[in-house]
Image (cartoon, rainbow, N blue to C red; front, side, top):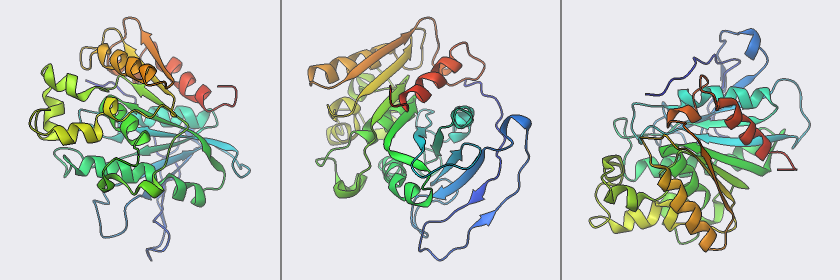
Length: 303
């Protein structure tokens, strides 16, 4: 089970996509000293009348103060939870707030999962649309800099992040128009299942459930969204994994990094000794600040 600290939404402003005719609304929320000036803005990433407005949105956390155009680096966050409705974006909120406190904008996305209208292919379509909304997010918030950005996912969200960030023109059009696919500068996978075929073949029923079958039954689906089948050597990937992870085997990160390196790409494996699956995103863990510093450092020019 994930152990997370409760987050406090501050200055939430409901924002709709340009041109949909709806008015923006503002909702006052409670404030704590630690988060008094961090603002959170909600953006639906699907056109009005499509998707599920209760789930198809992302929350943009902006650092306190006024900022010049293109001066605030961006991190996109994708939560995991076995692709199921049991877990949502809430458990990534402490990461979003910690990044905003360090001067980084964090776009924490929600999407439909198994049990809440998701599954194959809806979950993947939602995530593709959410990350491809980043250029619009940039236009609506000129202070953020999307020219040098980081895509981060945890667990199933790491699979979604690595896949969404490395989609190539051969990826089916249903997962985003090849001409408008957003491409991150780098990707950080936290405890991600990055070799779905191997995971399914070794008994991971969460994978066969989200894809609707085994690799033998639905091979095209695995080829379409398995990160190890969609390697882009031009996008650097850091795969972080706890050696005590009993939910997603560290071998998932190991095999993916080796495959990227064989393909001539840049991939780095970071193994955290004795750390569990949830430790990488739990504010109560010994490595939480290390993870925050790693993500924040990736956005700096010297990284």
